[in-house]
Amino acid sequence: MTDPIETVVADAGYVSEDNLTTDCRPELIIATKNRRRQHAEDAAAPRGRIPAGATARQRMDRKLATTRGQRLYKKRSQMIEPVFGQIKHNRQLDRFVLRGRAGVELEWKLLCGTHNLLKAFRTGLAVA
Image (tube, rainbow, N blue to C red):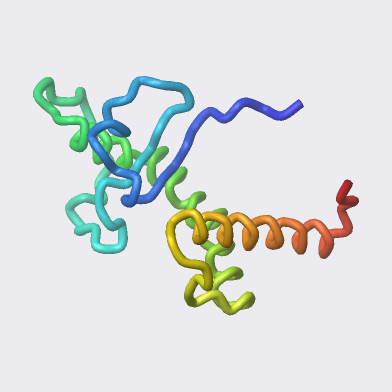
């Protein structure tokens, strides 16, 4: 049995008012801006209560500025980004062959599936 997912960490492509204001499990941590362009003054972890008039985006920015938020977001880059690098560089995917949204989704699922199969094969896991 697998452990339930407690936290989902997403990049700025998933930031929207609906995603920021949803009250669901698992906890969502979504970047509200490009983290590489973060200013030095944003680096200090926030202290004290969250201001009463803070918007959903400001609350998420505050959550990401905490030590925990920074640790979790850093983990995302270590877990997720290498997969994109493998697919783009080693598998030489620089554009999709199929056209249209349905075609691209199908091609992407095929690439991700074969990525996982190759990973299982290389680690010696039995694929049933």
